[in-house]
Length: 187
Image (cartoon, rainbow, N blue to C red):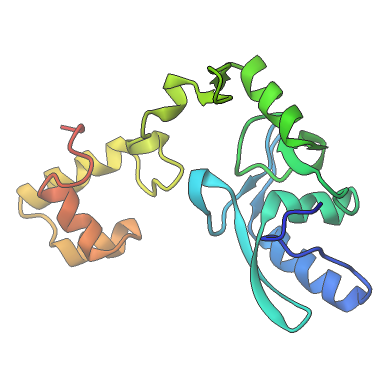
């Protein structure tokens, strides 16, 4: 059975497919490795895009969209998994359709999970640690930029609104950085 949270995409109308492809490619950065989704992201760093389908607006995972656009319909009962383990990757040859069991076995083999007790599988301890700073999939700044923001503000060289505009983040983010509510681990 297909995942009910994700609409099945049918490309009967070529104009709709072309429009979706255009929006999709505007937010993808290709490289020799992964093709990184630069748009919105859901939990754990998976790319998402809003689509209107069958008269309803919905959010679709971009790796699933890429699979459908480049490979074909996702088989019933299958997940779209990453060979590269990068949730933001939409490169078709990095994706495969697999069952939940296959996806979990892949995670165990790669050390992202470990076999558990009678309750099944548990996350590997490294996967449970919250990612902070640049390792967070939601980070918009680097550690160096955070240090610069603090130094420039402390020296009176820039105001919080100026820094927010210059670094393309919100005023609240800059305020939290300066007062060490965010990025506290950076000097």
